[in-house]
Image 1 (spheres, rainbow, N blue to C red):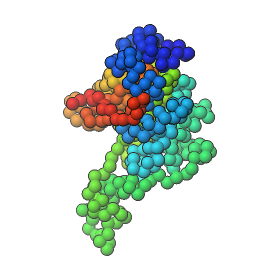
Image 2 (image 1 turned 90 degrees about the horizontal axis):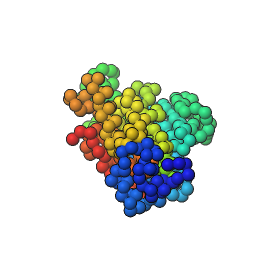
Image 3 (image 1 turned 120 degrees about the vertical axis):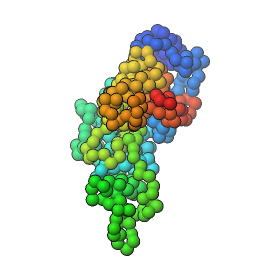
Length: 369
Ligand code: GLY
């Protein structure tokens, strides 16, 4: 496909010439073939956006913005901003679970296919929208990644407000986690306490009922990608990262090639779940490369999950048994022609999709039964 051809042209010719030119050797999958032949699966005029399961509103917003004429990168950053601002999502932005010191530290990266530019922030504190800050890095600097205090100061310089991101719900979850560490530190579990002034649960506003709640633990994240009718692809990943992490820990989300990656001639990929495993296999880069060799998005996702498991076998503590890991990773892929796929280690996961048929969840494939 040359630069003047649109994705609509690509879908219309539908075939080997177009496919070969973007390096996808394996031919069209069924879904793409249907799009080409009938002009449906949504509509060939529709933008397509995909996200992790918590991104239904994000994909809906991204597609609406793209239809209004926005660049896909602006649509997805605005879309994930809805989730970053949601206090009930404990995996991203405001309301995200804090690090082991009770401080919310956020990571995000953004990549713009047409320019192959990336921007990223890591360990940023007190800024609710790290994806928008990562986009500023991409747009306004010659850098790719800014971390910690520098990222905060960069955001403030661009007018992002200083905000307290630790919600009461996240603080209480963090306190419950602190108490459960009590066999190795001075934080006492309630049933280990021998004195409780005035019958109160010291420093814990949720009381006994709260103590019985499971302690939320997450690597959760939102990944979102979109392609417009010209075949221009962008992607973004944003997270509060591993809950109760060591301060300063950086996951895969802000690392270009791990938490997300775009090659505008092929498509995009992103990841959620155990970031350390994704980093050690360059997960998103590997998925895009696999699509470039002709695998469908779903095949590419499953292939790279297999690589992650193979690499994880070298660390026995990460394995549930000889074959299966004891952690999850979910990966997402969006091809330049609008075909998409997602896969998780285990069954039951869903991802969000918006196209000409509206926004919905679709099931992820799984590597293991
Ligand atoms: N995938 C998110 C993280 O590990 O931080």
